[in-house]
Length: 228
Image (tube, rainbow, N blue to C red; front, top):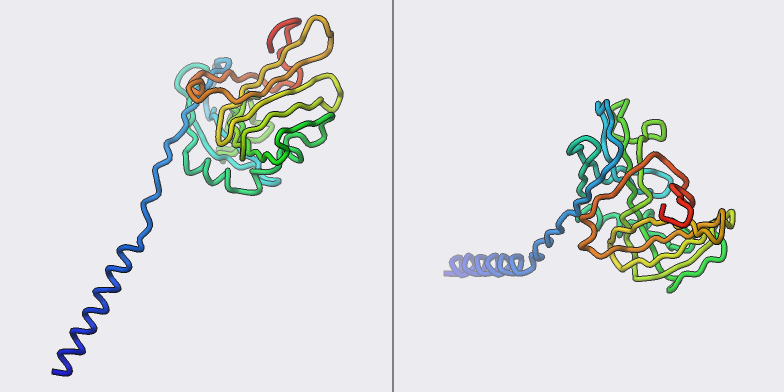
């Protein structure tokens, strides 16, 4: 009888442990849907090894965080996966204070609130000549000054370019958003530019992003009294 009682006790302990393990299992990780972005750029006669890539700066290294594919002459699509964006936002090499990151070396900087931190994803089209999947400056064909950006909190900012010719203002929403680049050259102030970088509503992320040959960020594609 003593043996039988010992076996029964052992079974009860194991059974209880099993119930404890089952109740301690964490909930499944929620699905994070991808963000799909569409691009348009000058059509290429030769599309061999041409790719569209999303890149992020992690400290001193450039990391490819997404690759798209051509959908037609001068068009492409790319998906940023939710898990990838979550990882980037949590990486202190990417998400850094706006004041010492994007606003570094600028003049007359104001950021409200000044505790905001950002992580940016940039886009380019390149010809992968060595087929390693990693774009280089020599392989780059087109890019865009629009970007996909994470902000630790909603904020607004203003600064002046290092050469004093351009004034940039912007607002970012908390979390990830598409940020549109716009440059105006007022006719009343020749050789002076107004740059805006604002988060767009989520519904507008489906709009096509236009890519172009590498140009100056603060003065690119200027038209007197008009848009860039």
